Image (cartoon, rainbow, N blue to C red; front, side, top):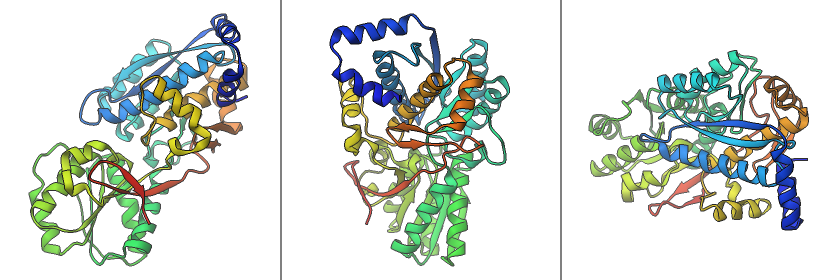
Length: 375
């Protein structure tokens, strides 16, 4: 039985029965789950999304009797999206004998942390790290995702560019980091294959406040479309400074730019930005009760990572129930062999811990920080 079915069952129980179910959980173990990600720094918004999803899942699962009678307990770990800090966090998790991790969030942090978890037998499920390098060419026993990879997201973006936008001159920029450079390279490969002219391909320095030099290059090259691999702080500045210099090119980015703060930075220049995101799971009628649970807890269910984070906790809870054990080795083995129903759909893993299927959707962003499905 999945945690979602437990949640539905709980709604039909009396309050007394729910209390009895919670009491049963209290008789089992307390299973600590670290929630690791940036809860400080320039991309803390993404950490907050993961936190909202994971905490809601933990609360709902505990209220429905726990994971096979075991209560789940969240332990927050801030890595600020910094690889060195992520390694320190991973070592701290191991030293505290925590066997399950939701996160990390940024690919650049997740990759080095994952090596520690794999070596130490800690189950990690990331709801947001999309870089293929996390799992590519590796048989991962303990590392999983509840989101697709950039080599799924990149082609989805490229297909839209090729079939719908049909630009004449493209610039592809990235932030020189694992996530940004990886997806930018994936998009370029697809555009090159389709004979779309990429006249600029280069990296920018994340954290800079002035991108006028690269904007001048975009203008000089007559670029009519810009793809940026990276996060919203740089994307916001690139769009705003491009408009200020008279560059009218259309911009597009991955889920890392799909944040309301991109509009806070870019203002009206964010109107018309294209972004690839996971499907809008909060709009799925099947998740209506779950969305209400978020709202009741004063959390926002809308965003790219809330539902994947909820699903990440669910698959761990399902693994504990399915394996009838809290031993991470047994739980990981069960997760590799079984399909699980979650708010993001059916989750099935390959030998690397990647999802067998995941769909990215192209959206048009608006200057009021809303989005609509792109035509």
